[in-house]
Image (cartoon, rainbow, N blue to C red; front, side):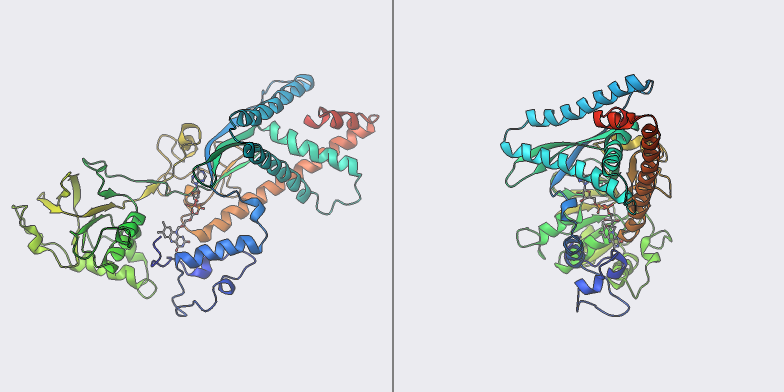
Length: 458
Ligand SMILES: Cc1cc2nc3c(=O)[nH]c(=O)nc-3n(C[C@H](O)[C@H](O)[C@H](O)COP(=O)(O)OP(=O)(O)OC[C@H]3O[C@@H](n4cnc5c(N)ncnc54)[C@H](O)[C@@H]3O)c2cc1C
């Protein structure tokens, strides 16, 4: 989002549990009916939230995940062979870290890998602990045995996830990491890969797919200004409206092309109350009222006289091509071709998630596995209570990936996942306690087993 934009939601809707949004953004209320936030306010609220709640240890900055893979466990096994297969897996785990270390070029990396490794262990340990709430008075050694078996064997019983990637440190240093997790939550959003028109010239350097690029072009470092040729904005969603507003705020004239009719009931503007979203309604009003004349103009070199000075709308138009000389060719609903010289093009017609780090780019996780994941048309198929992927136990998804396209819905996903994991952990603790009790009743074999890592893996 550009700095001047306001969120669609009221700031308070994006509040997280335990920290009052208004306490962290005092004196910034615009009006009682319109208390939307700027990107700076939201970003500062979430950053401060992490500090206030002491959550820094749960975050690793600048980490980029390049692969998430399941390490499967052999299914057919007696107790004896199971032990071996588990040990085999553990060796695999160790090798995973070794592999990272082998690739290390700097001593720092060991620290990082170990850091992740410790974090993983601590995570397991902590989760065991949280499951232990109210279980005081238990034999300490017994508890450790339970923890040990929960921390390792239960994760392995459904297969561990291996997560690989790198952390970008100061300068251009990329330090690889590899860690193992029993459960993985996908929360990578759905805006990494912009949708494309798929027309000739879309890769030309004046064609962009993000509002941010317009922000850069109109900033002091950029070269776009009031004397520039118009900017062409393609699309009729809120990002396109944001681009229109950004250009107009910087006195850059706009050509706005979109496929739907201006009065199409499906346009998002129809769903936004005027009082709360006056700027979007300003755009919508222009989309309807400052329309390029429909009468066919055969001569493509003369159309600019029909343009409005700041903004011209082209409903029911589609782009045919972008030319290297910065002309773009559009076709209207009546089939007439129109050519305009522009200074920049912004194609803002939606985005897709980028799940390249998963098998089949995560496509197999979708409601329709034959199509790519998309927030609206094909979200990740999850259990609506636990948010666990129906196609992949131990893998969870939340946010736009499952069609929840608002920050305020993230809480529901996070709560569902946390609650599911906690319940499972509790169940395991109970199961392990029973096992230990049974083993204890058979002449102390349990101690031997958990000490050697074998019994715990049952
Ligand atoms: C212009 C705009 C305005 C919006 N306004 C509002 C609003 O007013 N109210 C509202 O409730 N919602 C709003 N939304 C929607 C809201 O931003 C999203 O619903 C929310 O950000 C989703 O959160 P998320 O954490 O799932 O994904 P994101 O916020 O998209 O975060 C995903 C994160 O994952 C990271 N990531 C992706 N791939 C990898 C990888 N391989 N390795 C490591 N990290 C990775 C990304 O870098 C990113 O930091 C708006 C969205 C846009 C685009």
